[in-house]
Length: 426
Ligand SMILES: *Cc1c(COP(=O)(O)O)cnc(C)c1O
Image (cartoon, rainbow, N blue to C red; front, side, top):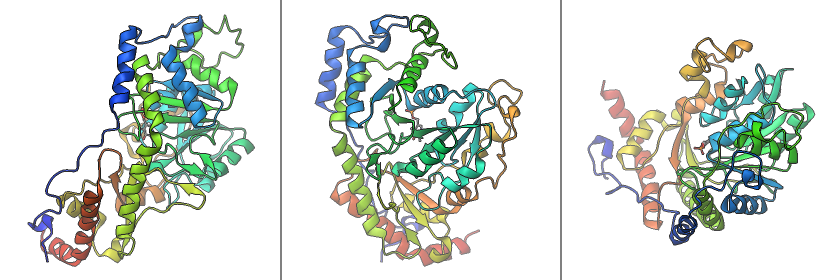
């Protein structure tokens, strides 16, 4: 029997995994064409036809809207910018509450702060780690204006239920869909069930343009507000005869023509990129399915998963080894896994309530709870249960997949020794 690498044995992987490249000759040609044109951005920041962007930006937006079967797509320079524009377009103002999940990338919960909005954390479900609709309903107050659902790790939140809750309470549902491109719930693409959906095109996502993002919506008014916030809205509200100026002071959140040209090519091959991740994840799941104390990701009925991250659930009691030690032993085998971030409200920003200026604005406009224990399910998942493997950065072939599974099986097989060693060493 081979010794665990963490105890001095040979690691399962003789070498690191190969990086995955989604960028190829088509992207190179597309960028060259833009460079040859000399026009690297077609935008103007004042009222004229170019206010809406250059030819590649507009072509990407048309293709995106077609692909995701929605009326409007609005490109931006990142999903963080997209979330900011979405919160602004939804009309969030000082003291308004925005319900967010604690398990997500920080931008989800930070975006509202720039408009004076107060992030209110609602707990997640133990199965798919996305917003629990019951917990969301408990958090709704007269100050609530927006719910941001995150399709976390590639699995859709309970989007249709959340949309119903939003509609019943006259709230705007924003989907942070940075991690779940092409995932579906009940026949609808993740990102298109809410009033606004935000996609990311950063380097780490399924497809990318280096940096970039796209907002989608079926609401013409929201689409226009997104576009005005993206590009110095104050200069065009007059010519466009817009009466409600709420949040229409603008920024520069514009995508370049080069990024848009890359995005058009990436969108063409999107299925293949997502399928590769799904195949890796399903292979890993099949390999650990029968191992006591370990649980592969579940996919809710009616849903499909985009597997931004494949996540292993550890039952410490059943396994007899702590999650932390199990993960360290996997890392030692050359399996590049990590612990998911702690619930966001535990960040110093929320604990100390310092965001805009140094006096507690906008938190001081309300009395949100950021105390430990605010979202017990999320805290337990982050603390004791989850181990993640990023599916996007690696080019995992059949041989690598076998080794990844073998690494988990090896640590699992030797778990008693691992526990013994842990007890023996101080
Ligand atoms: C990556 C990510 C973002 C931010 O995307 P950028 O395009 O890098 O700004 C936001 N939310 C989630 C859930 C993400 O994973």
